[in-house]
Length: 204
Image (tube, rainbow, N blue to C red; front, side):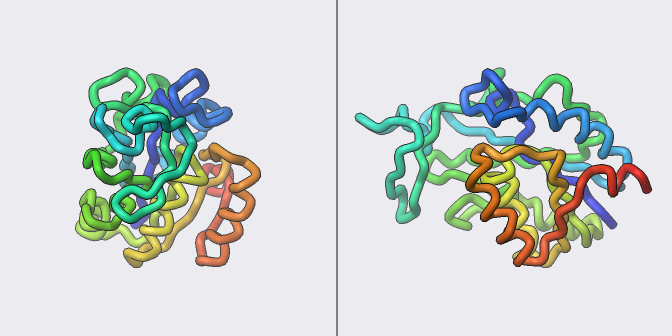
């Protein structure tokens, strides 16, 4: 069985949001068309407390995009984003959600960031996504969403580590940094990830 995992299609990652991904809104119609092609559709949601230590605002004299060591891990400091209960943390209103069977929230521990939909960055806390997929008999995972070079990338890597076949739907995702994504794309290919366009699914 196949599952579509929609990563972090939230207002704060859209144009005008707190941590906007260029053209992030352009993927929403593509994702909506894809959903009917899958037996199971899931979503992840960044869901940070206001005191999250990945926020530059929670560190004296630090600016967004500076790097620090946090609990032994390198941490990029971000603008406040996807704060629990805020409009910015909500899914974009144009995203169709009626087919989403379950939502896996991440980044809730203020001490650890959580790019992947499977684990926090320290691999200390599981979201339960891997167990859910295995319980449902899923063997093939397809990924889309935001941002391609951060949360989508780390979610795909963990999917492979958990033993799933992984496919990245490139036109249903956008990177925060286009230049850096060139190297990430090659790494994913080297890891055995299939990279396809949505048309390869929609035409079947």
